[in-house]
Length: 155
View 1 (cartoon, rainbow, N blue to C red):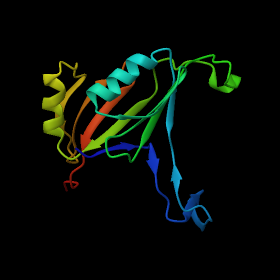
View 2 (view 1 turned 90 degrees about the horizontal axis):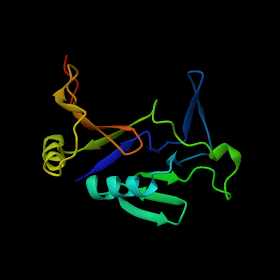
View 3 (view 1 turned 180 degrees about the vertical axis):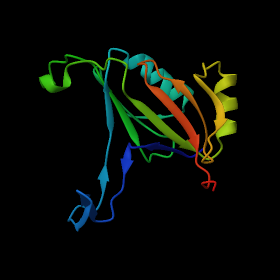
View 4 (view 1 turned 30 degrees about the vertical axis):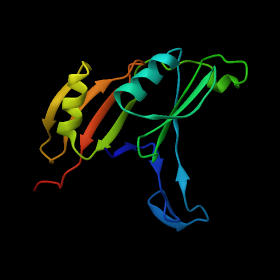
C-alpha cells in the first residue's frame, strides 16, 4: 500500500516563494523529517511499525528514525533531555497542536485493516464535501493521524 506523509516530504523544483514572489534557487530538493521528542519511543516504534507498517531506518537507545512503507517519507523520535542533544531539543512534546496526514491509495481497506487490529478510530471514515475520504487515529504521543484518500474536488 502506498503511503505519503504530507508535510514530511517536500520536493522543490528549483523555485521558492517568499512573500508571494517566486524566485529561482540553487536548492533542487528538500526533505523534511518531522521529529517528536518523547519518552514513548518504544510505544511509538510499536505503533508505527506494527499498526502502520513503517520500517526502521535507524535506531539507538535515544533516537528512532522510521520510514513509510515505500520509503518516501520519514519521522523520528528522540528521548527528552538526552545529554547528546542541545537544550533546544530537550523538552518533550506536550501532546497538543500537532497532527500528521498519511495519504493512502485505498482508505476503505486501511480502515478495515486498522479496525481488525483493534486500533481505536478517533474520527470515523467519512467523505468531506470537497471529496476527500478519511478517518483519524491517535499515536501513543497524542498526535492525531489523519489517514486520507484524496479524490478529485467536487464542484
